[in-house]
Length: 138
Image 1 (spheres, rainbow, N blue to C red):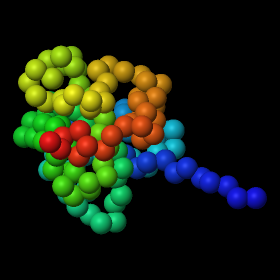
Image 2 (cartoon, one colour; image 1 turned 135 degrees about the horizontal axis):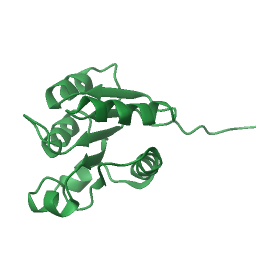
Image 3 (cartoon, one colour; image 1 turned 120 degrees about the vertical axis):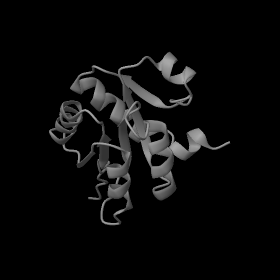
Image 4 (cartoon, rainbow, N blue to C red; image 1 turned 60 degrees about the vertical axis):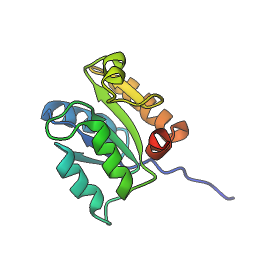
């Protein structure tokens, strides 16, 4: 009998607030995902530049010091063109859109959120969400 196993994506969680980042990682790890964590854009870029680390989904805060989430997603996409992105933020989608920080069609969860919603959105992004480059290319 032939079986097809669907692998879970590897996820990079980027948030400058350590308790938030660790809680998101805990939600994902206890659900069987491989999770990498970074406190900001530079650390995240160093992780994805390592050819031994595979990342399929970027879960990132949008408003962070030094590099906001959209810029981070753009830079990671240049290294890993297949990357999919889930944004998290305490700000409303309207504010983020008005500031051009969250492109139309990007998946987004407003903080605070629970484990069930996070897992639902990760599944949606992985199964049907566009790759980041498809959202941002002209």
